[in-house]
Length: 206
Image (cartoon, rainbow, N blue to C red; front, side):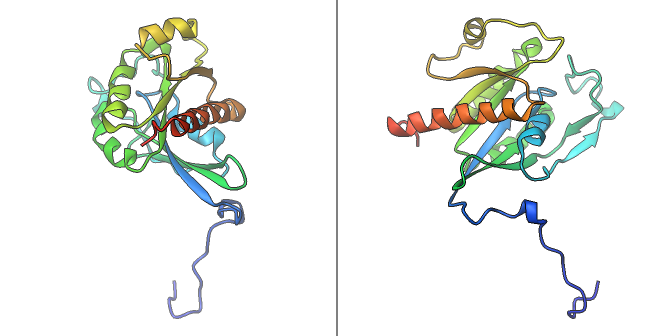
């Protein structure tokens, strides 16, 4: 490329440009264990082409990564996923999906920085992974909602039973979702935004 002016560096696509009406932006993180649907959620709900950092899984991960319930998964996020969605003409959410494999969890602290809230995606086949995830958010003081991703072969339980199993306080919302569906993923984000608004109204949001 000639940097003397004969060529120009292309800018963002028109559909990727931030709307001129946007006045506020909020950082949201999508967290959860390996294979719970974080990349799928960001991809389904983002109004721009999502940035992904997926790499092909190799034999090096055998015995290191827990892929129970995700045996058919061939790629995994190694840094983050990124997307954007407008909630209103004035409010934009920036979505950051975290890597799920525990050996990449050291990246979470940087992704949590500046986040107003989080969505914890849960797979009922591996509820035990969620405790570490929620514990890290609580340590950082990041408010969160829990979204139970409905996998076709995963057992279904009443949300009240899942709340008990996850030891969730009554104030933390828990909802079911199908992250493959844009409307379902958007509903989860709206649940989070309503929760954050209620915390702000009571002075509980730092």
